[in-house]
Length: 465
Image (tube, rainbow, N blue to C red):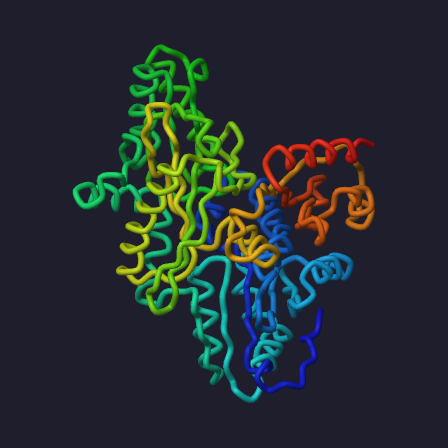
């Protein structure tokens, strides 16, 4: 277990930022409802592995950071991180247990609880943030306050407003907001769809839509990493209604979460890949005082099945009119979130249709898969990074051809293209833990998209066994 960085200045001692990587807690009801125990366990483990990725969210942090994660971070990876960001004072604590509910694990871990009390020092004050404002996080904050500590939570709503996280972060919640907002914000559009409950009705409604339109999207209320979303395109299902309904029913019947939560059935939008790859996105942060900060717009990189695997940022990845529209709609949504009491990061995912329309798909009411990429870019290039660099990230690049790869051996293999602080180009490795799953995570920075593709092509060459 790492120790807090030494510092004799009382001012810095009073500025300890505690961050808890609680990814699984954000979707714990969904994970708990997974029928396959092996898949459930694998999901918890993989979410824990992503903890070292989120360290990059603090690339330019001024305060001492006490970073708590369910999976350890090696000295080699920490040294690499510190070589990129030498002014960042970050220490890592790992919970003794990894149940998936890390805030409960912390409460039952005397060593970490003592470390939190020590971090508060004589001021008895801590600033605490997390990946997501979960109910276990709020319980942990309450428990620490009961120990006499003053806990400041600048990226969390007050307890009475915490409902905003799950409500607006759900597929049904954001759809209800869209329905309420049509007159005020005509650009706040979503794909035509309905909310229902139970796989019997869902399979019937979805089959009707598929037979009519040769496409349909079915979503559970709050899925994760592509799970809980089924996208059916032409040829994927039978064209006859009864056969189609039976196949959809059988698929939904495999996992209990389809039975436990609302189901959203939507029209399949034919996307225009020329606009941010078809999936524009915008991210904001609502500060403690309610002030709204626009952070960036990007393209979300997803698999054919709809699973997130990274983002693309550059000033020319979408037309200015689209960038302005998603930003304006995002500000409207941010104002509604802020008025309801939400505080912290959130994004809005859009779908760019071939018909010229831009549709809201969902909102992730938490720090996102792009937040750490954004903070890394700001630390390296400044606030106007979108005009100074092009970048894209990948949170799970598969390398099955390289068996038992260590972080140091991968770093050595990719050395010719690693990020260079002088040229301001190259690849940054953002995870070591994922190597256990024969994949890794990275961000590529380049002067333009053409140059970034050259770096990626060189990466693929270097990864050949």
